[in-house]
Length: 83
Length: 437
Image (tube, rainbow over all chains, first blue to last red; front, side, top):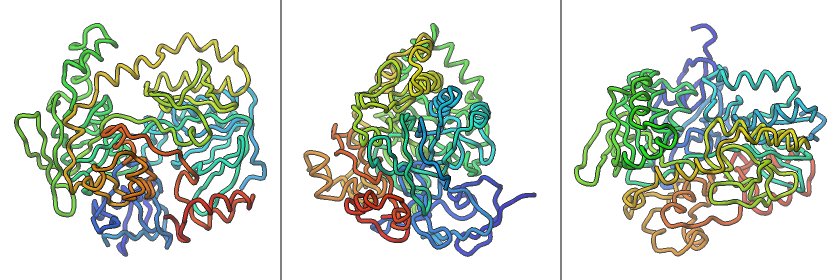
């Protein structure tokens, strides 16, 4: 599709429509789980609006980014705990 | 960053209440800024669909742009460094803005209650799932169960069904009689209203059950099935996503940090939306759950009040049809039954941030003791999830909020212009270098 955004999620090239959040992109193309909790449980987005912090991933080398609040950008490098 | 960070009115929150307040003040020639954590304005109910603004939001945003309102997106208010001075963090930067008046339009969040398996990936809130879908999650063909409590359930169910979800069931924990009484207050014939809603919203083929609640979510790496009960039978339903929340909780943290009094329904305000702190006003769901129409009127009133036009503000009072009556009706119609307050088992995680299990919390007497003994509430969400749960489960009140209101990186803090305030923030919370706690 024209204007699709290309980013990588855990090393895999992924195409998403503009305006897609990183959390949605991960759910669409990768897995529901994206983070390990402090005791090692797999977690995914829960509140969808930046409150629970369960959706945190590393984006372009910076950790603890709330993926449900961040829109995918061209060339973004997303790393989850599930990849 | 813009050179001038001083304003007449700063509005926190760009949902219906915030947008209407900002526009009202700006059209009265105030210098207005509106701050929001999302990339696009609209809040929850007017959340944009990927890049497309919600049509209702778009109208207000056009007026906001014409009135030269400054939009500060992707930004959180993390602290208060003096009267009318807010610390804002956005990505790797932070800056301070000052304002004569502050309008809090920070809305509400969903109430999560713990049950076995609620932390499995694929278990979300109800509004949460809609937010994820509006953020681009492809729901087509996905098997969804929606449960919990409140008017949000059928509203989200209808929207997701329209978008192609395979909606298996909507389970409301309240009894039909209680909900019908609530609807009856809105309309003369509740049964007729319900039928009309069902038909018009395409939910006619989806089982909507009352007096049913979840007891467990199961799956290996993510949710695969859930168990629902009516107190007698237990049913197992295979699903891809389980959306479950139990009502809405007003966001009051920033108001408390500013010293405002909070009542049973939310931030306390007078008829003109003024809190008991000078120059701080509040409007919309954060003052009490009332819906979008009330939020818009309250925002309009708050914008006029913030601009000093109290008589003009009073002219809108006639349109406001509720004085927290809707809030009380909601509370009684969708009152949480004892069973849903007793779902956690010993090993059920209650604090998701710090993985604190129910067995370590249930023996404590109050929030502070539990927090100090277990780290409950000391993670990145700062008790927003587990605190609301413990308030419902045990009536525990949280401690006073301390800045930063969201985790902030040292990188961001070091870019704050006033070094004194940066030191104050740093000394009260340990913060790691790379992006969070």
